[in-house]
Length: 415
Image 1 (cartoon, rainbow, N blue to C red):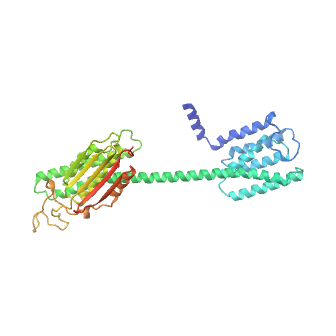
Image 2: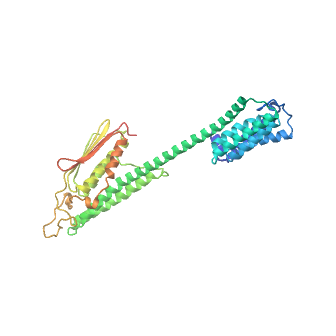
Image 3: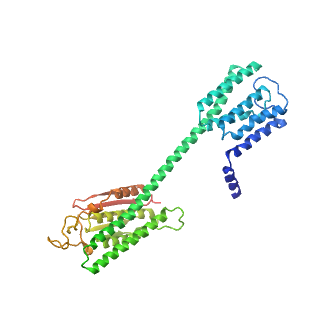
């Protein structure tokens, strides 16, 4: 079987002329065999002539151009038609006459330029050919002439249909390839957004907090260590993402799951956001994709909490059911801590009073969208992720001024 596959691959790699040559040789040889002589197409009642060198030359002219029927379809059908005409004029009546409809099918499928002109020229040649036969005494009825023309025209039409079908299939494949490229670019952009935005947001918040801790070396060292750890995690996640996107990477690439939620919550706490993680139930064995999407929902919600409500209490609830995973991330209203310098608030040494601090001793920030503003791509991407698995997603403000993100992710649609 492997040898047959290799032979087929080698045959497909051959030039198209080499692949069309066997049919031309087969028709030529069959036409010259004694049992097939004089059994071809016959127009008129002309007696068949014996096969001499002239007949052999006519048969070769009639059949051998099929070897170039796809490389030079116009020349092929012209030479075959000339050989067919000589075949009838000289009364060879060779089996090679069936090369004419084959050449017409190939011409209809492969002639690229001046197709209408080619049809007109072939039609005119047919009229001249039939007129010459009638002059020689063929005595064909107009109905017979019309039926033969329709049969030859049908051969061209079959080729034209094959051409249009192939063109439609090529266009469909082009659209599929383009849609695949767009989907892949969207997926890559979504993954990069999820990985980069969360870590960079945490690093920016921690770095800004470090500016106010220069007088407290211990806390400054802790904050800078947190920045370093976050940077290392960002590099590790980016490498993991590149491995996932690399088609030549054979090693198993690990994707985030429910087991990574406590670490995600702890990382966000170290950035100064009070996070309470509540997990109910146990993940199902078949919840791989659903767990991954649930992780991304929590990650994006915590990132937004760091951006827009830094220092506000954030509660993450994840419930693992038999048929779905439910996620709810709620954030209280904006932090009441004083704003950082550069945002309109007094600094630690400002004359209007010392700055208050959020949880973990980090400076609070009110409405940080000015420096960490988002594009809205994150929530839109989450809605698409959840919707792809047949789930439901919502995100919006609460009556108390906080923000709530909800997602219901079914398990049966998760691969």
